[in-house]
Each structure stands twice: as structure tokens, then as C-alpha cells.
Amino acid sequence: RNFGYGFQQTIKNCSAYEDHTLKIIFDRNGGYYWLFPRHPENQEMNIGIGLSINRNVKLSILLEKFKKKYHITGTVDYTTGGLIPEGIQYPLRYKNIIFVGDTGVGTLPMNGQGIYRALISGDIAGKYIIKEDLKGYAHEIIREFGKMDVIGKLFLKWNSIVQHINPDLVLSSWNGY
Image (cartoon, rainbow, N blue to C red; front, side):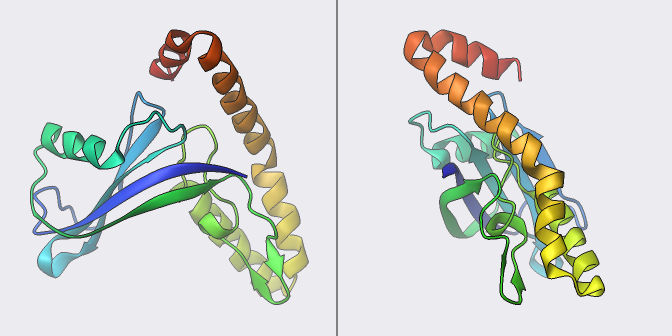
């Protein structure tokens, strides 16, 4: 299995707080940053970073640079981070349980982005729950995400091979992404 890497802070009294607004900012390093509002009463936000390729960098340092660049301030309430599953995670169904989001469809292998896939898998799950056809859920998920997973994993494999031959080529290909 392939995994990406993620790190997130929950920040109270966040200067970047915007109610009902999710922000995704793609980065030249092949990953992305997210800003998700949590609680309007204390202007709490989840702000994080996800990368598909381990570039031997600390995600916490990259997140701090991001916050500084965008003048994001507030009180960090807690942090979390770790491995993020990339691509479809099997099984998609176990008995009467169907898996959505990271537990089912994982993230996009090329950049670790997962919110779109989580929302779409939740929508598909609802459709098959109403139909009382949980087996159909897995088939539609594979149709929806299977090809992109194969392409993404091949792209990552290519980058891994090329990185051993010429690391500058990998960086330049990610910077153009």
C-alpha cells in the first residue's frame, strides 16, 4: 500500500477563520494545504498539509512557513499527523459496513488530496444505502476512482525511479504540476 503524509493543527481564535468556507491551496511540492472552519464561537480552524512523497522534510516546519506567509495566527489547541492512505483501500465493504473517505477511497495518489474523494464516496454510499444494495457501492467506487489510482500510482513510481537517476528532474516535474 502507498501512503502520503499529513500534519494538522487545530487553531483557536484563528486570524484566517471564515465561516462556511473550505480552502484548498495546492503547493509546488506536490501536496496541498487545507483550511477548514470548525467552531464559529471561538473562530477555530483546522489547518494542515498533506504530501504524497516524503522529501525528508518536517511537515510541521512547512506548515509554520505556510502560516507565516499567509499571516495566520491564533492559539494552537492540538496537533495531529501521520500516514494517509493513497488510493482505494480494500475491502470497501465488510458485512453491513461500507467504507467511505480515507477508510474506503483513500486519497488521490498524485497529491494526497482526499476531501473531494471523501465527499463523492459519501454521496455514492448514500445512493446505495437507499437502494439497499451495498455490493453495488464497491463496483461504483472502483469505476469512479480506479483509473485515476492506477495513473497516480504509475506517476509516483516513475518519480521514484527518476529520483534515483536525476533528482533535479523530479523536482522540476513537481514544480510544473
